[in-house]
Structure formats: C-alpha cells, structure tokens
Amino acid sequence: MSLPQDILKAAQAANLRIATAESCTGGMVAVALTDVPGSSAIFERGFVTYTNTAKSQMLGVQRDTLDAVGAVSEEVAREMAQGALKHSEADIAVSITGIAGPGGSEHKPEGRVCFGITSRTNCTTETVEFGPIGRENVRIAARNHALELLFKACSTN
Image: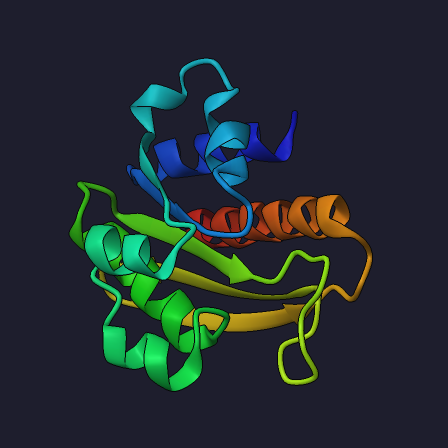
C-alpha cells in the first residue's frame, strides 16, 4: 500500500476530510491523494496559492503577516492551513510554502520549506531545510513530507 492510500484509509477510519493549501508544490499533494481511487470520499479540496495575492484572497492570509515575515515562513504556513479549513468542509488541512529554487537568499535559502498541519483543535508548523537539491527534488521532498504529516495527523485523530 502507498502512503496516499494509507492516509486515505486512516482518514476514513477517523471520519476526517482533507484539504490542502500548496504554494511551491503547485498541487502535488492534492494530485498524490486524488490519484487513489475512492479519494473523493476523503479529499475535500485543494488550494494552489502560488502568489501572495492568491494566499490572501483564497485563504485569508493576512497582508500584514506577508509583509512582516514573507511568504516562506511558519506564520504564513499556519495561516494557509487555517484558511484551508475555514474555506472548506475539511477536518484537517496541510499547507506548504517554500523556495524550491533555483535561487533563494542568505536569509531564505533554496530548499527551505515551511509546513502547517491543522485540525479543528490543533495547529502546528515546522520548517525543513532540504538544501539546494534542485527544484524538482525540493518539490518532491516537500510533497512527501506533507504526506507524512497528513498520515500522522490522520492516525492520531
């Protein structure tokens, strides 16, 4: 069984519906989940919010937060995940915002990705430094990490 299948099985057992809010992965988590037959019973919706405007309009990320800390931050990841829940009928949401590359800066290097995972009662965030492993590899690693976060969250609810 694959990780997306395991997630859907765990979510179904816990009676949870899932939403995703993705930036640098461009919908890769949603694709991984919806590739599984029967996922429509669990996967509620996905938001691809690549720009700051989309993050604000679709998820309610505060402009002040974006101005203060930038899109690649745990604060924005938190607001993205919470916004995905608020703007859906899901019970659990995962968010991803990061710098896939090429590029980055001294303060926000290539490969830095921030994640949020939220339920109706709990929200946690974390940052993972995947390093300058190339755009495709950062995106794949971020997708896989988000799937692991979803699996843990669905298994403990």
